[in-house]
Length: 221
Image 1 (cartoon, rainbow, N blue to C red):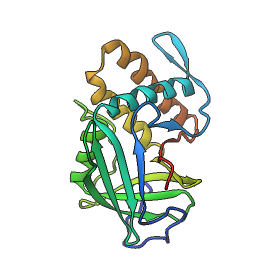
Image 2: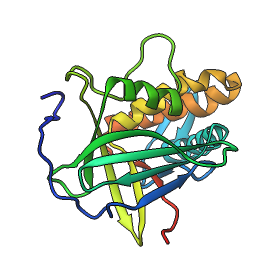
Image 3: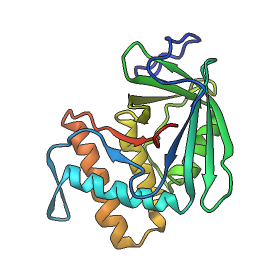
């Protein structure tokens, strides 16, 4: 058991996600979205920023940046409780298989756990957040013999899948991005967008809010 998560070789029956179908998520401006209202404000360098607008603006810039690296990501949930993931490089002709992980559903509707290896965690960070320099709050909870759980939430609506990293690991992901890929951004942009958004997300979570940021798949066939 670690930080509230128990890793067991059991799983609940699939809940709502169609198995055997590939869900495609396009990068770019609309890649990541806030799915719940985020209340409150954050003061940064003497200026007060509304939390939700600050986070939304940062997500637009992050989506555009990631779109320079990847055109899309595809996910296929299999009946044997494995998840195949593809990435199509920016400007590439075909998606390439990226990794296969294990997954299982929790007893709570709309929640699932991915189980990654240490190597897959490194690949995740290299592709989507960059590797921070110096100390940072990791997205993942290590220490389980190369079985690393990642808590996620999901929702199906009209054949489209919205899925994202659960609190507070999504805030850790934004922090890692700010200290990873964000270091390559112009200083003024990184400061006014990423740093403020990072503080805004942590502040909202500390206030007891459930901050949800998700990517939503393209319409199905």
